Length: 231
Image 1 (cartoon, one colour):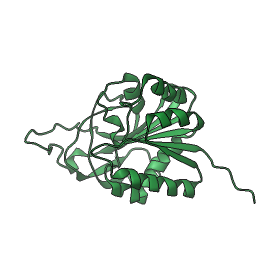
Image 2: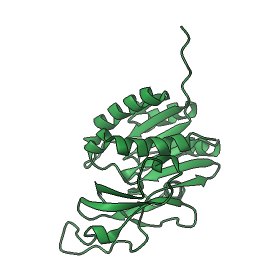
Image 3: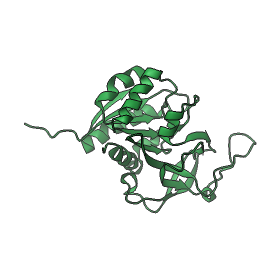
Image 4: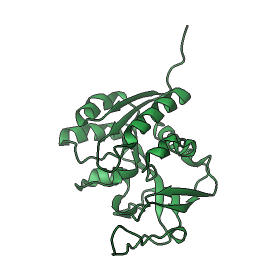
């Protein structure tokens, strides 16, 4: 019996950290189910060595709560080659939260995490109902999340597809007595861009493990992966 070919190949890269380690098994399980449902090839690595070894064979790399802090210069060059060859990158949640400033990677993601208030529900605005990650989302969407504030936002390059309304949550409510400042009227949450020949999609959504059991969120994430897979 002949089987249909996978439509594209996705490599998931995760890194253990203090805040998101519980997400990893839920995310990996969700990716296995997503790959079966949408028929794409899926693999997963937790090491920079595995990332550098496997990446040349894949169309899209997903950094899930992972960044470039643990990558050597040689391993980062593998990622750069991937992008320069017209391939795709997807960043999820704390991928923008790097301790080490690497301008190339910062620009690839499109923004640098600054801080966030306590986990809260808020209203999102869908700015592009025709973008694959947003096709199923209403114009206004209620979601609970860590609402990231950003520094070094590449607003001239990124195309914002989701933003959060700071009037719908307490953006000042941090984890101490010093109030946070928020970002004001324009507070991006998900975006995409063309970058040095490749495609980059980033979403801040996905802090809690439960997100990876939520079909609305998973459809949002798959839409970004689908878009990033196109040359």
